[in-house]
Image (cartoon, rainbow, N blue to C red; front, side):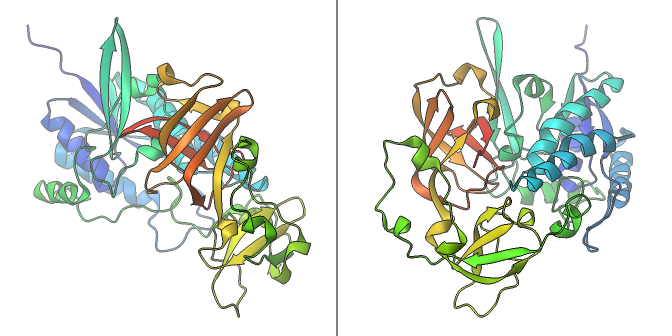
Amino acid sequence: MSAKVKRVVVGLSGGVDSSVAAYLLKEQGYDVTALFMINWHDKTGLIDADCPWDEDVVFAELVARKLGIDFHVVDLSEPYRERVIDYMFSEYQKGRTPNPDVLCNREIKFDAFLKAAEAYNPDYVATGHYCKKTSSERDGAWTHHLLAGDDPGKDQSYFLCQLSQEQLARTLFPIGHIHKKEIRAIAREQGLASADKKDSQGICFVGKVHLPVFLQQKLEAREGNIFEIPGNLEKYTLEKRDASKLEELAAPWKYTKEDGSWVGKHQGAHFFTIGQRKGLNVGGKVEPLFVISTDVKNNRIYVGQGQSHPGLFRPGLKIRNKEIHWIRRDLAMKVGEVRPYLVRIRYRQALQKATMHMCENGMYIIFDEAQRGVAPGQFAAWYDGEELLGSGVIMS
């Protein structure tokens, strides 16, 4: 008796990556069904040059026809608004900088989408992410390993840093071992409509937006003051913070208006993030100004001149206990443990050497070299070599 053909539902977005993922799965002998997600209808704040989803669905259907696979559409806009966009607004209101792409993967692509795919009785679901999965078995228990993609310029493992073992068990990543250039070549060879389609940019499923306009759907503009902080404050001249005090090493720089000088006005501290340059509208400086701190309570922004301003750099960060997530639950650190890991705090950042300290009141990550632009609300993800082990939301 021949083995049963495995059925896979692939999230077909209309882009070249998921198109080639669907092609490869079919070539490997899977019974493939394509499912296109509609997650956003509102075009408020969208930059005109970006194509909305109604064009993407045409590309996706053309690819499905070319491959001879069933094509379906599911509208997940309600859970997307509730679990991603509303969270995003809430975080900006608090003066934090969320990563909607990480939330989109955890809450939509690998949760709501998984549930929607059940209608087609799949053995697996698949996506066009540039990452890899391997699995190992010990004493009858399986562990799933999330690995970086082979193309260092496209590795998307960071965006999947909140996935669980249960989600990974059901998922395939067909293109993680392939470089982007080869993906385009495969698509052209197979005559797929998406072969030369530009990659999407901006917020997951929303597109490229003018962020202040987008956020003003729910967050009011409030005029406040911008203060420039000099780079020679006494706090910066300290050789280093007390290395025996983790809380001190992980704390962000704090300022008052007396630390600097007034240089302009803004329309809401909650619209800005650490390291931001655009949108300040303050000229006449020797070097460009960058946001080094925001104070939502007093509606103030603190800025400093130049990319090397000391206020942009921090030696560490903290993650609350409730925000710590381990993909490899078997490796979760216990209170009192200290381990060296590789860490990144944003997509495409090179992995940084760091020491992780598990304490009763949370996890402290102390870097070998101070990091630029540590923003509360973003995700720190930690790796052992190419394997992503876990992540957490940066506290402050």
